Each structure stands twice: as structure tokens, then as C-alpha cells.
Length: 189
Image (cartoon, rainbow, N blue to C red; front, side, top):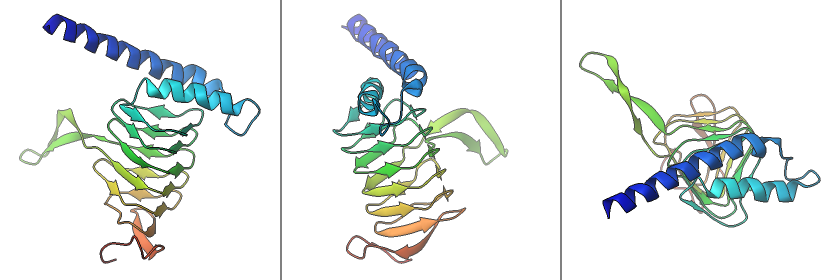
């Protein structure tokens, strides 16, 4: 039983590596979805991504240059923009849209406060993106962040803290600028 489980794990890792390679090579050369042949190109990239992630919903979009790591969950109609990097174990609840060059980091080095040094090991802190979230061009999201539902993150923002639902946030560090949907807004700004 242990040998069979070991073989299936090895096969799964190999499939993951092959799909990541194909996404990084062939997937990068295929056209954007709105160019001629783009719909077919998107289907091919989505096929590669399905071999990497834990779950992928329907009608997703993956643009050229996207880098998606293992363990992610992509809800229905999740759109990953050109040249985006999605770290391991990132969760998109669905109906999301992101511009080009968005980087979502989920891995961080462990810091030892006693001797003020970084350990050689890393820790995965998943990022959760709610429903109907629009992430602008060049946004950086740091490990362990949760972004609520119905949120707009302005271009070039660096998200260092959780963002509540129903707001527009921007800046470096990213802060709430205004409430845009009172029905979903939670908490004080």
C-alpha cells in the first residue's frame, strides 16, 4: 500500500512539473485571448493549469506568461493576467480579474527573533482572494493576506494587511481609500 501511494505521489509531482514547464514555454508563446486564436490558446493554457492546481472552476482565463504554483484553488471565472505570478496554495473564490504583472506571494522565510537571523527554511502562508475582486496592474500581495469580496485594489499597490469587503484600496502600503459597496462592507475604516 505504501509503495502504491509513493508511486502515485511521484506521478503527481511529475505531472505537475510537466504542466508547469508547458505553461512556461508553450503557454507563453500562445496569443492573448482577444487575438485571433486566443480562445483556443486560453483553453490550452487552462489545460496546463489544471495539471498544477488543486481545483479550477469553469470559464477561467489564463493569459501568456502566467506562472501558477501547485496547491492553488481557482474559482469560477478567475482571470489571471499576463505575466502574473501566483504562489502556492493561493485561493481565489471566483469572479476575479487581475491586470498584468500581479505577484501574489505565499512563501516567506522564517525569522528567529532571539538572534535576529533568518532560518534557512521557509513557511507557506496562503493568500485568500474573495469574490468579485479586481486587482490592478503590478499589484504585489504578501503572504498570509485575505482580501474580502467586492474589492478593487489599485494599480501598483503593495498589500501588506488584510483588506475588508466592499472597499477600494490602493498605495504602498495598501490602505482603504473608500467604501464602494456598503452592502458588503464590514468593519471600520
